[in-house]
Amino acid sequence: MSKARNNKKQRKESARKFICRLLFPRTKIVLLSIPLSAVLLTYSFTLAEKQGPIAYISYIVSAYSLTIICAAVIPGIKDNIKNFLRRNTYIDRYFEEVPFKLKVSLYSSFGINMLYAGVNGFSGIYYRSVWSGTLAVYYILLSIVRFFLVKYSHKNGFGEDHRAEWSRYRICGIFLIVMNIALAGVVILILEDNRGFEYDGMMIYIMAVFTFYITVMAIVNIVKYKKYNSPVMSAARAVGLASALVSMLALETAMVTQFDDGSNAQWFPYVMTGVTGAGVCAVVIVTGIYMTVHAANMIKEMDKKQMIYEKERRDLYE
Image 1 (cartoon, rainbow, N blue to C red):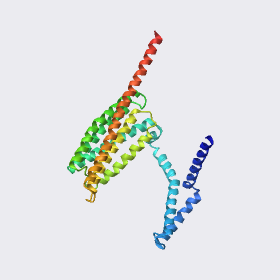
Image 2 (image 1 turned 180 degrees about the horizontal axis):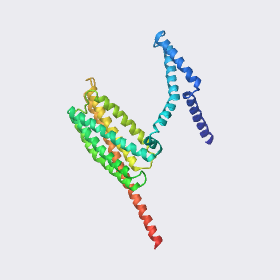
Image 3 (image 1 turned 90 degrees about the vertical axis):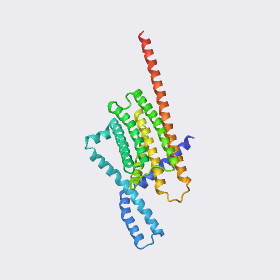
Image 4 (image 1 turned 45 degrees about the vertical axis):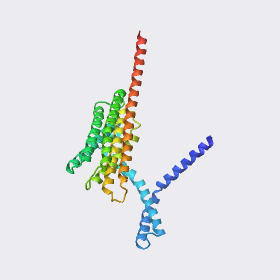
């Protein structure tokens, strides 16, 4: 059993070394790949057929060349940019001080939420869109939840008073449950009217970029800040996830409405919105219930430990 485990470990290590050698070859190979890929591409686009075997080889070599160049250059560029930025006192604090980094994350998330609410509010007024106005109100409420967390972080350190943080964690869970009722009402109205959020002109592309950004950041923050033992940051991650999911729902209904050319069945937008809306509502309400129950249990456990500690202390001095 031990031998099999060692063999498996050796295979993993060999694979890791092979990938490293493949992505980070010697400098000579990196430099030689540049003119080689340039010659092959030139030949493919001028003398050979663009779909021939030589063309495919040139595409593969060029893709590999671009990959190893990026692997070689990007870390150095990243370090140089980081060193340049760290000349600023606040940026240096961001890299060095974890509490300051967490506060910046909270403040930036709050600002982005308010910006998104403002854009949707403007869209709702300018285009007279009820759906954009509704989304603006929802994100204003999310911003209030974030402000609740920001206000706490401004006065307190992360992980210092766990009972107070669990209390705020529970309140955020209750907020998500209540807001989810309103969200479910919006989804029902969309299904009844058989129409969803609408963004005119370039707005749909702006919202698509924003949705992609907050979704990626929500996933990154879930992984990145999991290691910090702070219920406040856990609450911020949950709010970020809810924000991303609602934005995805709004974008989906808008895209179905705007890009539907009539080739799809009439029931298709209805089913798509219903399934996505039900999924988003389910995830948000389960998250809210979990936060509320889990925080209540943690507070109860902490109070119980405190009572036992005080009793033992009284018995010691009696």
